[in-house]
Length: 149
Picture 1 (tube, rainbow, N blue to C red):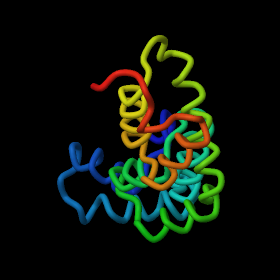
Picture 2 (cartoon, rainbow, N blue to C red):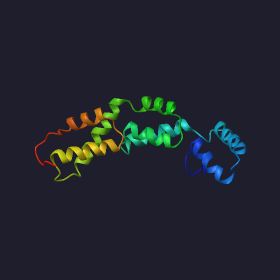
Picture 3 (cartoon, helix red, strand yellow):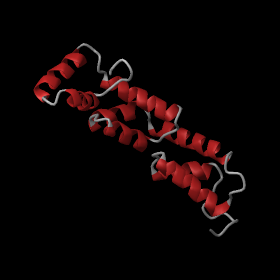
Picture 4 (cartoon, one colour):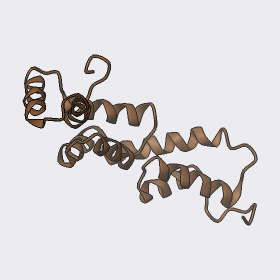
């Protein structure tokens, strides 16, 4: 299982329980694998943050949610987010996403464009203040002339 994908302790425990429901046997095995370096949760967190911000253009809230779903500790996630994804970088990622998304929006203008971009940024996990700043810096106003939709 670990040869195909890096797994957290929780993910490995859940998968092993399908074969061996007795946790007294599973937990020592997981601890042994971790002590030998086969489970690297810090590496998983770092990889997810870098992939999220550089390739997928996700915000910190989305990355945190995905890491929590994998059973990682919120304190470790928060520390790593602070280290690898500071707020100024998060703004840059949001701005890059807006520029990329604008290229595919064609004839959409006005408040409809603003709402679509703001919603897309929100779903990608960016905080409100970064969304507002990225849209403003892109020249997109919520009070634009155009459609009244």
